[in-house]
Amino acid sequence: MRSRRYNLRMQENRSYLPSTNRAGMLIASVLLAFALTRLVQSPRFTLTITLPGFYFAYPLTLGTAMTILAAALTATGMDWLTRDHPALGQKPNIEHLMIPTLTTFVVGAPLSLLSNGTAWWIGFGLSAILLSSVFLAEYITIDASAPPYAFARAGLTALAYALFLILATSLRFSGARMFLLVPIIFIVAALISLRILHLDGTDRWDFPWALGIAFVCAQISAGLHYWPLTPIQFGLALTGPLYALTMLSASLAENTPLRRAVLGPIIIVGLAWVSVIFLR
Image 1 (cartoon, rainbow, N blue to C red):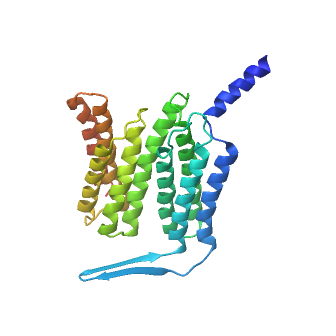
Image 2 (cartoon, rainbow, N blue to C red):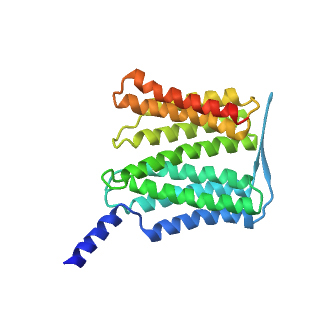
Image 3 (cartoon, helix red, strand yellow):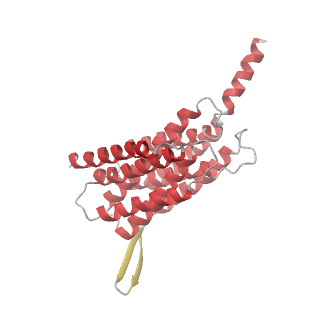
């Protein structure tokens, strides 16, 4: 009798945790794709587009191709991983592919910028932890009734904002030109805010708010592009408004009075921008 209760309890616990074999295979495959960029040397090609009054040049390397491959591998792997969840059923799982795919794509940027040695291995280890955390959190959030759902939701939200901070900082550090910076910030801000707003436990997709938040972040990135800011200052100056506007949208969706709803976002933006000033 005791063994039967124990087996039932173990089955319940496993229902909201991913298969160890599947998750391990997915994480190992993505990390292998990143590791191969350091083991295999390849020539660099430069994509150039020349128009009247416009010249575009972008270097294409094996790291670029492997980052895209790793992101595509993550999307297909998360689809394979989430299909195993008993609570998914026939529901679409595209929402659970967004943040993991973005995470893989974003962590590839700082890894390609780091030089060989201790710094790269530290970044590689942190990337492994970040990817594992995102995969686990996304799997748990499939079932809103799962015991660790609230913790997974909070963790996934924090990881999404950290992801945006890493992206903005890496773009600034790499010296990306404004016509590349603005669209990337817009797309990533829209996807992150859309996913975070969808974590409220309902099936609501708030596209107007997500597009509005992305537009504001893109406009701020364009305005700050030529300012003498360090990469971390630039990242904080963009992450603060993203966090604040997403919080404002969630508060208004819960019918919070406007005065109370705007207080928290104003404080967050103020703290973020004051931090930018003192980090100089």
